[in-house]
Amino acid sequence: AVQYGVREKDHLIDYDQARSLAKEHRPKILFCGATAYPRIIDFQAFRSIADEVGAILVADIAHISGLVAAGAHPSPVGIADVVTSTTHKTFRGPRGGMIMCKKAHRKAINKAVFPGLQGGPHNQTTAAIAVAAREAATPEFKAYAYKIVENAKALAEELNARGFQLVTGGTDNHLMIIDLTNKGVPGKVAAKALDRAGLVVNSNTVPFDPRTPFDPSGIRIGTPAVTSRGMGTQEMRRVGAWIEIVVAHHEDEATLQRVAAEVKEMCSQFPAPGLPIG
Ligand SMILES: Cc1ncc(COP(=O)(O)O)c(C=O)c1O
Image (cartoon, rainbow, N blue to C red; front, side, top):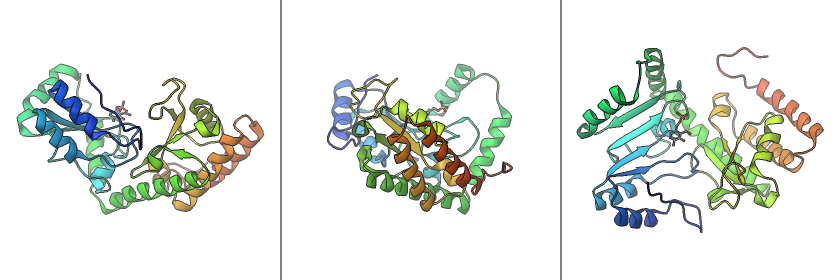
């Protein structure tokens, strides 16, 4: 596979590079979609590149499918030939997958799924995905998706104000990537300290990362789970303040425990839906 990337100057997807690589290599399939991209993806731009080289366009919207279903991110449906998604990220369903495609590809995909790749049918998961899809079609879910983005923007703003360097400067979706180089703390060290303080993030590479994927420069944070608990922009500001304290004092166990107690106290005011408090 040939990979395109992001621009060095602003870390946005390099559509020009994608076009020139596509023209050079003439791929049969062009993939778009991301696992750690905080901005809107221009599916139409990828469509025109795919058309220029006669490629099938596949959009993997695993991360953003809940936002797409709610209209909080543009949809690739009707633009891409094939759309794939997991069902357990912003879609907020059980672990699983979905493939949507234009009729021309139906036979090939069905055959590849079964008998090609899949074993027995997991009907209980399929039923749960149907429930998630029904939920995703409700006005409540639409409000939830927009709130995820609002919360992510509030957290990004707070972190920016506290001197954190966000990849692309902020976010348009549910996640942000923080480059911790200027804080002098590797991503893995920060993620472990944050975990001890009750704040769950993952270490993540940043564009053109001089460190390795196993010991990267950044962390990745998302707002879907806290938004499900009913937290809003005020709580995101507190989270931003905690992140600053924990990163600055990542070796100070007493500070981590103090923040953990505050996090627990705030979470107790926003219980996870369906679970008893305690
Ligand atoms: C863009 C994208 N596609 C697919 C997947 C696969 O998800 P999973 O391994 O959780 O099924 C991920 C996981 O992070 C992803 O980010």
